[in-house]
Length: 63
Image 1 (cartoon, rainbow, N blue to C red):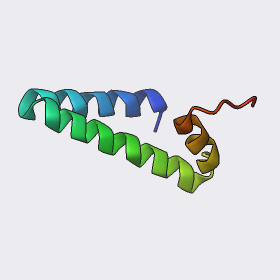
Image 2 (cartoon, rainbow, N blue to C red):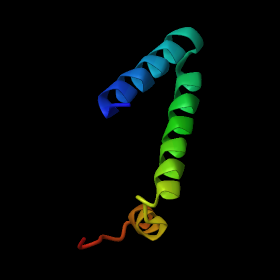
Image 3 (cartoon, rainbow, N blue to C red):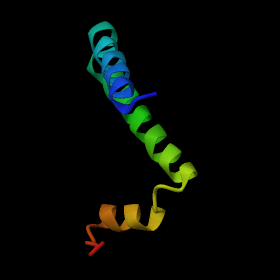
């Protein structure tokens, strides 16, 4: 599936969630989607957990 199509589908789900259930439901769905994306990238091996922790801590990387 093309990334642009996935982005459009996620955007549509988020917009409909906001319209139907309000801001907090939208926020929870957006948070769940973001966490799911991070977990998926980690499982695929495309995400270095150490780099994520360094970014959260405010440490910079030269890479």
